[in-house]
View 1 (cartoon, rainbow, N blue to C red):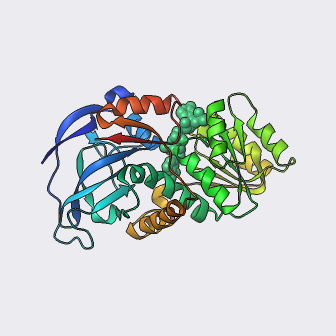
View 2: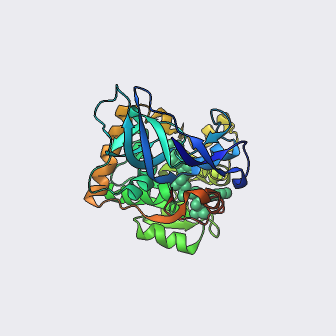
Length: 326
Ligand SMILES: NC(=O)c1ccc[n+]([C@@H]2O[C@H](COP(=O)([O-])OP(=O)(O)OC[C@H]3O[C@@H](n4cnc5c(N)ncnc54)[C@H](OP(=O)(O)O)[C@@H]3O)[C@@H](O)[C@H]2O)c1
C-alpha cells in the first residue's frame, strides 16, 4: 500500500525532514501492518535526524514510537489480529508515517482505558523511567535524586514516579514556568538552571552531602554539575545528550574526586526483547491506571509538520510529551 511519511535523505537540520509518499510492504510471517493513529516524538528522533545516531540507510523514515490499529497480520503471528489497538516503542524505526510494518515482538496491546494519543505520549518515556528507576537502580523511599530537564517528557513522568515511591526528586529546568510545572508534578525542589548554580543548590539542599543518584539526559551542558552533585558512593546515570554528548572524562582524576559509580543507560540494553518491553509496559500501565503518573501532552503537531516539532524541542520550547498526528 501507499502511505505518507516523513523521510530524510541525509542528516542535517529539521529542514531535511520531508513529507513524501512511500510504499509500505505486506507484512512478512512474523510481522503486522499497523495504521498509525498517533506518533510519539522523542528527543532521540533529533539524534537520528542530525546523525548522532545512525539510520540503517537513506532514505529513512525516522521515529521509534507510535500507536495504531492492526490492519493485517503475518501467518506466524500469534496473539494479535486485525482491529487490535497496539503501541510500539524502541523495537524498530519508521514510525513517522501513516502506516508501517512492524515485528510482532514490538507490539504492546493497549488496554481499553488507555487512548491512542496518551499511549503514544507515554510508552517510550514511561518505560524509560520504569527501567531507570527499577533496573538501573531500584529507587527507594527517602533517597534523593537529581533529575535534569524535569519539565520535559521523561522528566514529568520521573517527577511523579519518584514522588509515588517516596523518593525526593530535585529537578532542573530552564524557565520559571518549567520550574512551576515540574513542582506541580511531584518534584520536591526544582533548580532554575538558567539562573542558579546547580551544584551549589544541590549542596545547600542536601546539607553538603550531595544526592544519592543523578540522572543526566542533558549531557554536555550539565555534566560538570552532575559530577559535583553526587554524594560519595552515589550513582551517576548518563542517559541522554540533549545539549550534546557529555565530554570525555579523565576517569582516574574524576573517579578519585567523587568516589561515585557511573553508568551509561541505553534503552536497548534494558528493554531488549518482547518480554522485557512488555514487562516494563505492564509496570507503566499500573502506574497510569492507579493515577500515580499522569501523562501531560504539552504539544500536538500534524505529522507533516514534524520539522516544527523538532525545532521547538531543540529550542527548549516544549514541556511534557509531544505527539505527531498522521
Ligand atoms: N537512554 C534512554 O533509554 C533514553 C530514553 C528516552 C529518552 N532519553 C533521553 O532523555 C532526554 C529527555 O527526552 P524527552 O524526549 O523527554 O525530551 P525533553 O526532556 O522533553 O526535551 C529535552 C529537554 O532537555 C533540556 N535541555 C537542556 N539543554 C538543552 C539543549 N542545549 N538543547 C535542547 N534541550 C536542552 C530542555 O529542558 P530545560 O530547558 O528545562 O533544560 C529540553 O526541554 C533526552 O536527552 C533523550 O535522549 C534517553
